Length: 168
Image 1 (cartoon, rainbow, N blue to C red):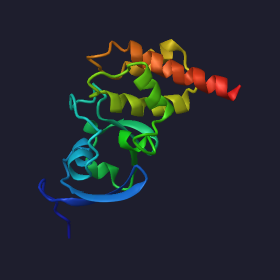
Image 2 (image 1 turned 135 degrees about the vertical axis):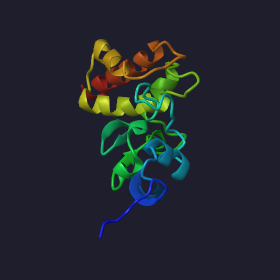
Image 3 (image 1 turned 45 degrees about the vertical axis):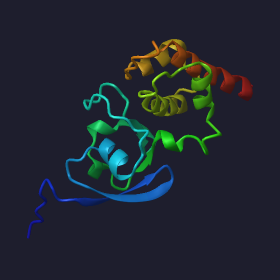
Image 4 (image 1 turned 90 degrees about the horizontal axis):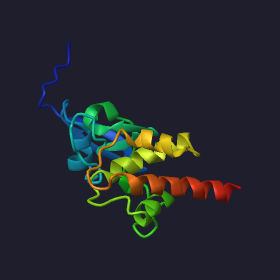
């Protein structure tokens, strides 16, 4: 006997979201971005282009930066997902990266910022001492209409410089 699933059938999706086991229902064609925002209420995940171009919907899934508009919620079943809400331990204790963004005016409207921050987390884990060209290359996967990227680049460079002086 074959199980028939209609486009309107909902399926239970279980994930670990920012360290907490969560569950919600999603239709087979629901984007992960919509599941995070509308079912799990992780509103920091923004949907911009819905084509994977702008990067606003980027989160970490099992430690890798992923565009949630390009993935169905059912594909994330069992995954460990980190969103911008999970970066800081509390609103008054920002990470070094978030503090550098604030200090260097690396955000204006803030729409793209969560996705950029999530990409930076993976990028800096893999490339702890990137040069400016590498930083700009990583940022080329994100669209920001407000900042001109200068403050973002400076914030990332500050985090890199702070890491190198603290480990020396």
